[in-house]
Image 1 (tube, one colour):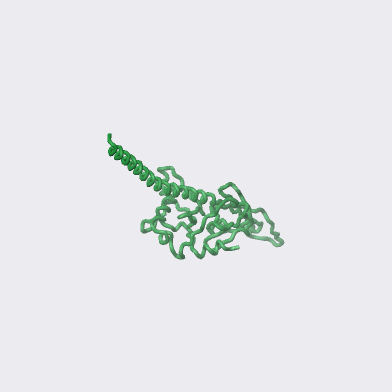
Image 2: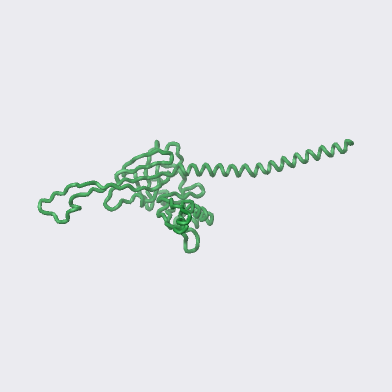
Length: 256
């Protein structure tokens, strides 16, 4: 084989190696961003999960003799017979930059005749805190519970969205948020009663359950629907949600 042929073969090998390296580099560049996005998404999901809390509110109502006796004789003396106790629970979320767990205001509404005595917060990391009724503040449709820095140590709160006043999630974020909302309900077993009977899937949605979108807390569940909520135009209805609007968000998260 002459020198010319060796030269041709050598350059052919170099071109082949170069082409392979170029193809590998392009594939690597395509895979690495995808892996980065997946890692970011997993990290964000973990932070959101850690920020979710269960809020338990302990209520008390004194029951007096006068509550049982309608006709009172002269000299009647009222006495305390017992104290009724009741506990309600809601989910909430630690808001970024604060020591406040936000939840629907209706979670903090007293049952008839009851008064709030204590509030307990359990975070996803297993830590629990207890406070008095004064640790709960209500602003419009939302309430928040002030928790200690020791309780939230190591937990990063979730940024709260500022949806324009009067706008729905669909009007603000477009069609993609509807797809996320559909998945949110279905994953928690919010389908039709017939589908639930056929599949055995139970509705696990809870009041105060957070709906996250694009890394932000955009809404909380106010009412737990018994079936997939569909609007009259065919999309997923937002009627069961409390959406965070700009004014409400600022007032709620900056309160002392």
